[in-house]
Amino acid sequence: MSNGIRNWLAQSELFSYNVVRRDRWIAQQALKLPAGTKVLDVGAGSCPYRSLFSHCEYRSQDLLPLRADQLRYAGYGQIDYVSDLASIPVPGGSFGAVLCTEVLEHHPEPIVVVKELARILEPGGLLILTAPLGSGIHQEPYHYYGGYTPWWYERFLGAAGFKDISIEPNEGSLRFFGQEALRFVLTTNPFKMDLPIAIRLLWFPIWMALLPLLGLMVPIFCKFLDRFDRERRFTVGYHVTARRAALTQVP
Image 1 (tube, helix red, strand yellow):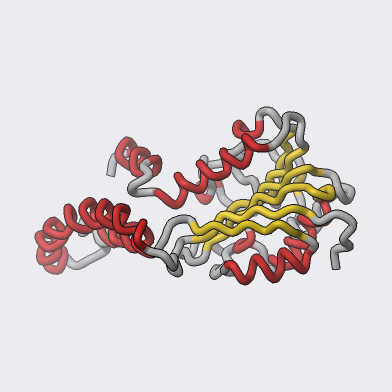
Image 2 (cartoon, rainbow, N blue to C red; image 1 turned 135 degrees about the vertical axis):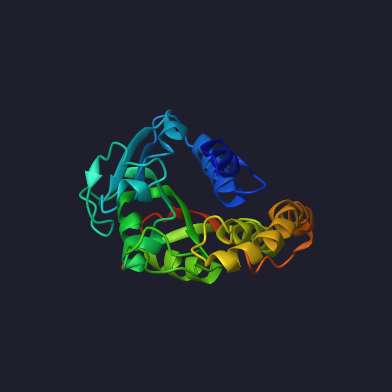
């Protein structure tokens, strides 16, 4: 696959809705913050959201454990605090907002992390949070968890001293199935799989027949049908905001 096609797929709401919709949602949250808000982007990696917070005092944190090829933009951005996410070297109440997106699954103690995020937020400060309900293994060996459900957020954010918790699914089951149909086509490409030549030749015409169905038609129809999925129990993850409660001691 050419880099041009790969980049187009990565930016397409049809084929990469998880990332595209998450980025759009984070941009919306950033716009709501007053100018000059002190923002900390934790587990910032390549700092892809820095420009969204240009009207704020943006700072970043990461432990820097990953290889360049495991990061979104093939390298770390400017990191202000190099530290463990469970122990960020700043005084309590230092920030008016914290961004923590697709990070909790990469820390061995996510509940401790949530308490630390509450500590560094000022009373009334905003937490902008996402984590996967389900995903393939990535950024190994630092991928420890998945399955972050609404009840996880309600229980552990509440216990950490957050209030006004808002939890929105990032689309529903049909969009997820459409994404996996495309993933099947990409991962079973006979030119990429390590197969004996006879099996490759046998699979190739079947794969070509499936390509327009699973790679285009199924994602399109799943996008249309997803609006009728009322329960959305098979979403890829949730978009979560919460406020640091005033005068609450973090356990």
